[in-house]
Image (tube, rainbow, N blue to C red; front, top):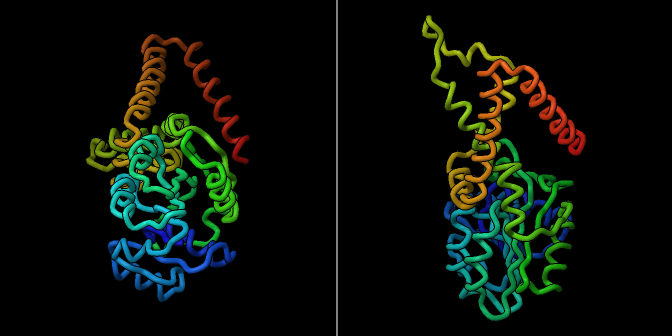
Length: 285
């Protein structure tokens, strides 16, 4: 197996595969030679290289754990060096653009099964990786009409073997869903803290120093990697813009209710929110 990108997701995948003996020899590719050397020394991977051709030589499975903006380019670079029968999967959090760009690049006999393991951690990189990162988490597979059924089954078994609960969606449905439940919340958190982050009291005290736990809770994900989230928002542009419009409409409704002193409607908006939040908490408890 070859892992492209030995960061949080890639290194965690290597660790669980070694711990459970899911695969044999594991090669790792990356741009940072020092990171690869440390991964080798820690036994996370068996061979690390900055040479993509070397990394994928003889691989029967390649997992693209690169940032979403670079996945297609990595595939384009490695495609000529993949053996017939090789299976490629990935961890990209936006699927439709990847499927659209990668499928036409597939060499004869090479198979691609798009995947999105819904797993992460507060910190990133090799040092944050753990063998249990994927345990109990959901993994979305987004096969197309061109996906080989036997290969799809093998990749489903692979992600299940590392501890994940696998679900199959179309790429478009995946991007719509995660545009709503993941990408929009990050945009809102970034926008919210930007809106109030520079406000000060009459004594020029930073108002954030006076905030309670609620603000910290709702903006926690605004600490996420700006580059990664820039790339995700641009890759899933259509659905992110649609969700921003939906959120803006919801916010504007509440604004009008406050402006018009419409307490009954305002209460109803908040009650509806309580109900939706209750469903969310119930599902995740």
